[in-house]
Image 1: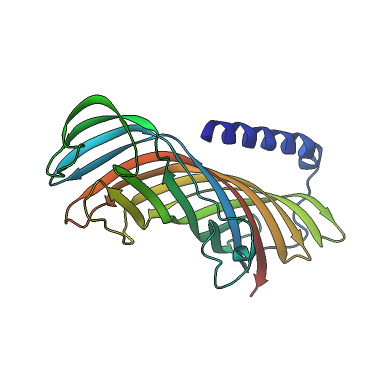
Image 2 (image 1 turned 90 degrees about the vertical axis):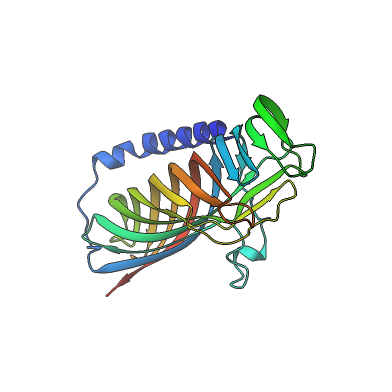
Length: 277
C-alpha cells in the first residue's frame, strides 16, 4: 500500500542520512566543476498512489466513485528491461539536463508510470446512470458498488505519463581516488503535465483509447548519486508529488470525461552519463 511504501522509504532515508552524517559535516567544496556539462539518464520506477475520488460525466451518466484504490503494474523482470525494442514497456524514467553551475542543474524528464484501479473492490457511488440498459441504470446516493469487470476497468497503463521540468541541487558527500569515485546527494523540485493514454471500459459504452493532455503534476525528490570516473553514475531516488487530471478521456462519445487527483510516490533507480561540452 501507499502508506507501507512511504514508511519503508522514510526509514531508508533516515538510516542513510544517519550513516552519512559525519561525512556531510566534513564535506569539502567540489574539486572538479560540473559547469558546462549536461547529463542523460535512463532508469526504472516503482510507484504507489493514494486513494482517489473519480468523477465520470457523460450524456448518459454523471457519478462519483469515492476512495478508489489503485496500484502500479510492474513488468516481470527480464530482457524487456535492456532490449531497445522493448525498453518502453516497463515503468521507466528518462531525463536530460544541464548543470547551470557546480551545484545546480535544470532538466527535462519523462516519467512513465502505470496506474491501475483495483478491480472487485467495493466503493461508494453517488450520481446516476441511464440508457445503458443494464443492471447499473439508476440513481445512487452514497451506495456501495463493487467494481467488477462488467462495470468498470480503468487504467493509465500506456501510461501515466508525467512530462516535467526540475531544478536540482547536487552536493558532494564523499570523494575518493582524486574524485574518480564520488557520492553525492541530490534534491529537487519540479512540475509538468500529464499526458496519459487511458484505457477505460465503462459498462457497455464504447471506449476511447488515445493519448491526451489530461492535467498537471508537481513533485519533490531526494536521491543518492554514485559517480565513477567523473562521468558514469548510478542514482537512487525517492520522488513524491501531486497529480491533478481534470480532463481524462473515457468513452468514444464527445465530451465524455473523468477527473481525479491523488498523491504519488516513486522509487527510482537510474543509470546515466555526464558529458562535457
